[in-house]
Amino acid sequence: MSSETEIFAASAALTRLHDIDQRFRDHVKTAGTALKGLGSLTAPDGEIAASCLGVQLNVVRKPIAVDGNPAAFEYAFGVVKDSAFRLYFHLYLDPQGNLCTDVKCQTRLCDFNNAYIAKYVLLELAGALLHSEHFAPTR
Image (cartoon, rainbow, N blue to C red; front, side, top):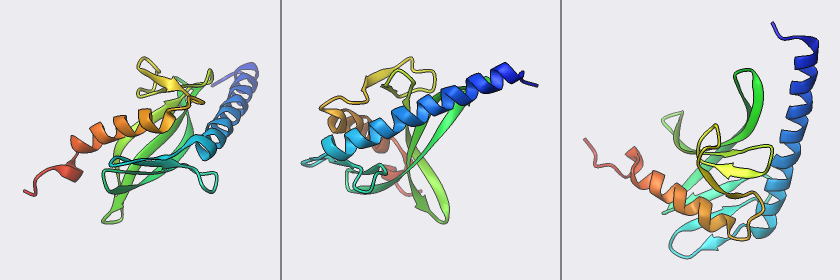
């Protein structure tokens, strides 16, 4: 069981994560763009939207905890097929504003407010899609 101090610290950390998530989505809304032949990363209604290599992706976002401590905001990119969410790519936003491709932010992609954010995210997403079941031969 967590102590009262740990719970209040976690609550404050979640507040910071929600703030950086909002700033990230605001940045994508203004800086997100379409890249010819690759796709688009936008936030037209404040929610992240993506298409890549002709695939329209759903983006599910949520704060996540590692070992009971709020650690990052997770963005899961996938499609709904046969009533199930098929995950193709994760992106994580840590409290310092780093976008990473792993939950512990060992592999940093860029800052959340990078001017070329659409390019960086879409290139990673395209690589994940091309190695996924979406583009695999039918068996």
